[in-house]
Image (spheres, one colour):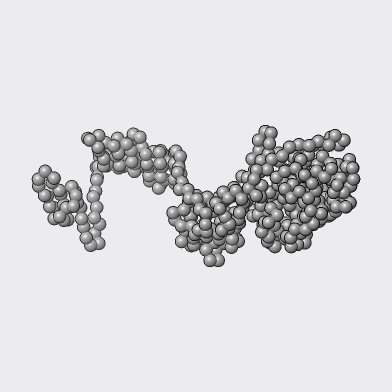
Length: 409
C-alpha cells in the first residue's frame, strides 16, 4: 500500500502511483476486489454523499431477505432499484414479482425513417413515413429475443416492406407488407427467424355522427345519408372510398374503391394496390395486396363473411352493412330506367366505377359499367348488379374487385 501525504492525500493499493483518492489495482489471474462485510445484523453498503448528506445508498438490505438495493438516503427508504435472490429485478419497487417489474412508466426510443433502412441495436420503435421502401431486419441468429415495434405512418398508404436477413422469414414469409396507413406490428427474433407477436390497423375512426377513413389518396372519407322515399331504406350517398357524390356516371372522383368480396379495408381495395397469387388461409390476409385468383382470394371459402352489420369483415361503418340482392332489386325497381342513367338519376347516384379482374388484377369497364357487391352468395360466387345499357344480376368470383355501397341497418 502506498500513501501519499498532504492536503490532497491519495491512497494506492497495488500501486505507488494512485490516480484517485483510492486506487486499487491488481494483475494476473487473481481477482481485484473490495469486500464490504458486515458480520452482524447491519447492512453492508456504500453511501454516496453530497455536502455531507447521503443522496444514494447501495448495498444489501439484511432485514429484507438480503436483497441488493439502491435507495435514496438509505437502502430501506425510497428504494429505487432491487434485485432479489431469485434474480427478479424491480424498478421503483422493493418487492419485484417478475423477472423485470417496473412500477412506473417506461420510455422507449422512437425513430422516424423516410428511406430504406437496415434496423440495428439502436432501433426500438420505428415509425415509417414517405414510402414506398424496404426495412431490412438484422440477422435473427445474433438478435435472439430482440423486439421491434414498427408502424406505417405514411398517410398516402404507400407500402413499407419488411425483409428478413438473407433467407430468414417473418412468420414464415420472406417479406411482410406493412400497409395500409397506420398498420403496425411488434416482432421478435427466436434466434432463427422473426415472428409477429401482435398486429393492428387503426385507420378507422368512429364518432357518434360520422365515420372517417383515410382514402387511398390520403384524403379523409366522409359521407351523408340519403333515403329512398318509396323503399324507406337509408343508404350512404357515395361508394366506399369515393371523395364526392357522383356528378355524372363517369365522375372519376365518385368511383371509390374496389373490394374483393368478404375482405376488410386493408389496402387491397385501392385501385393501384400490388397483386399476389398466394391465396389467404385466413379471413384477414394481413397485407394489402390484391389476391389474384379465378375463384376466391381465400384458399378455403367462407360464406359467413359480410353477413349483416355484425358480419365478419364488414367494411361498412358501425350500423351499416352490405345490402342484400333483394334490397338492390327493390331499390332499382324505383328508378326511372334500369340502366346507368337510371342508376345515376336515383337518390343513390351510382356511377360506372368499373371493376378489377380477379385473375389478372387489371381494371375493366371503368366509365362504362357499374358493378356492385351484395352480401348474397350463390355457390362459390357472390351476387351483385351490373349496370350498363341495361341492368342484370351476376354471380361473380369473389376474387374480383367491385364497388361497395353501404346500407343502414
